[in-house]
Image (cartoon, rainbow over all chains, first blue to last red; front, side, top):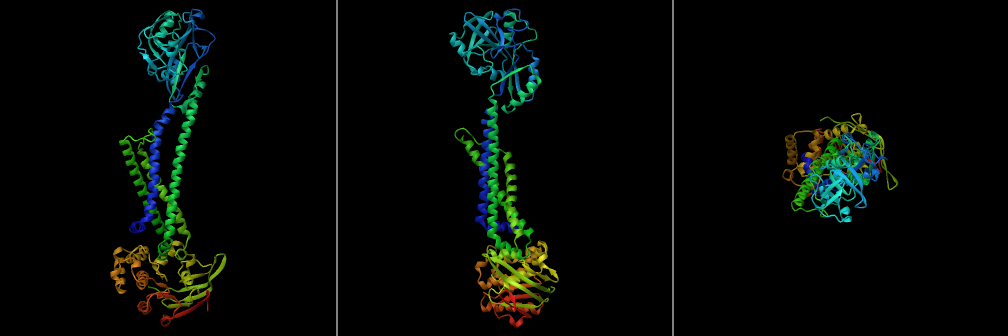
Length: 399
Length: 224
C-alpha cells in the first residue's frame, strides 16, 4: 500500500487528471440524475395523468329506461348522443377490481326536450369527491362563479356555454325536469366525455327521474361509469381487460393517453441512454487515463519486473491505483454535487426557472458502484498490456 | 549462495525494424559455470546487452534457449520467472534504471519487496550497503540529485541487496569516472574471491580482463 500511495503522490499531475475525470463525470451524472427525479415528478407526473380517464356505457335503441312508464318525449338516458340502458352499481365494483384502475364512479346523464328553451336540456348526476368524476365530467375546480353543489335538493350548476346561451344568472330558477331547479353556480369543465348542460348530485337526479319523470328502475341507478386509470401507460391494458371481462360495454376514450405513454417511454429511454452514455464516456476516459499512465510508467514497470515484481503484484498495484482514483473522484463528485444542489435549493434556483435539482440518496450507491466498476474496467486494459509484454521490452522500448 | 550453471544453446534474437530484418544475436551457444566471472566483450552494437537480456529472461529469444541449472528459463511461467528474478538474479543496467520519483533508499528497497522480507530486515541490509559504498547520507535523495557515478553505485547496491546467485552487469563502469570504476571493480573482485555469485559482465573495455575466468567475444551478434 505504501508504494501505491507513493505512486499516486509521485505523479500528482497524472493522479489529479484521473481523479478529475471521475469527479467531472460523477458530478455530471449526479446532477443529471437529480434532474431526472424532478422530471419524473413534474413532467412525467403530468404525462402519467394525461388521458387516464374514459367512460363506459351500454347503448340502446330504447329511450328512457326499460321500466320507464312514459313515452320518449319525456326524455332519455344517453351518452355521446345515443340512448343507453340503466346499469347496476355492481358494474362499478367489477371495474374497480380491474388492476390499474384508480377510481370508478357512477354517472347518471339524462336529457329531455324543453319547449321553453326550444332544445334538449341535459342533466348530469355526479358523484362528489371522485377523481373519475373530476376528469370525466366536472369538479369544484371548474367553478367560475357561484358555488358548487352542496347536496341541497333542486340545486344545480350550469355549464358556462349553456348559461350564456339562455341568459341564465346565479340564483335563477329553471322550471324543467318536472320541478324547479335553482342555479347555484356556473362551471366551465372544458372538453369532457360526460359533459352536460346542468349538473346536480347523483342522488338528486335519481330522485328527479324517479319522482318527477316516473322513470322507475329499482336497483338501476346509473347509466354511465366514469373510470380513472392510475397511469397513462396502463390504460391500454385496462381497456383490454375491461373489454375481455364485460363485452357488452361500450368504452369511450380520448386516446390521448397513447401519446402521453409514448412520450413517457421516450423520456425514460432517453434518460437511460444518456446515463449509459455518460457512464461509457467515464469508463473510456478512465481506461485511457490508466492506459496513458501505464504507457508513461511502462519503463518503470519494466524495471520493477526485472527486479522480480510479478505481474500479479504489478496488476494489483495498477488496479488499486485505478480504484483509489475512481473512489476519490466519485466521492468528491458526490460531495460537490450535493453541495451544489443544497446551495441551489437554499436560494430557490431552478434550471430554466422550472426544474429544481433534487438530491437522490440512492444515486450515492449507484455512483459508488459505477466508480468501482469503472476503476476495474479502466484497470483491465493496462493489466492486459502488462501481461503481454516482457520486462526487457518494457525497459528497452520505452526509454 | 549456490553457484548457478548457465547454458545458452543456439540462442538468437531477430526482429524487424522499419520493415528491415535485424539480427541482434545469431546462434550463440556458451556455458558458464557457477561462481565464475565471465566477460562478454564486443564493440557497441555487437549484441552484448541483447545476450544479457536473453540470459536473464528479460526478453524471449526467437531461437534457441537458456538453461539455468538445466531449467529452461524461456519456458517458465510468469510467477516462476519473477521468483527467479527476485531471488536468484541481479541485473545491473547500463543506464542504471533507477526510478526517478523514488528516493535512493526506496529504489534499493523496491528490489527487496518481492522477496517479502520484513521492513526492518530490509532497512538494515540497505543501510549497511549504503554505508559500504559511502552513500549512507544520500538515502533520502532522489536519483537526479546524485552524480552519475553515485547513481551507478546505487544500481549496484540495489542488485547486491538482493544477494543474488547470478549477477548480470551491463557496462557497469561504462559511464563512471576512473575512481568510481576502480571502487566498483574492487567490489566485484571481492565477490569473486568470496565466491558469492556467478558474475557475467558485458563490456567493450579491458578493465575486467584481469580477473575474468572466462571471456567471450561478440561481433555482429555472433560469437567469435
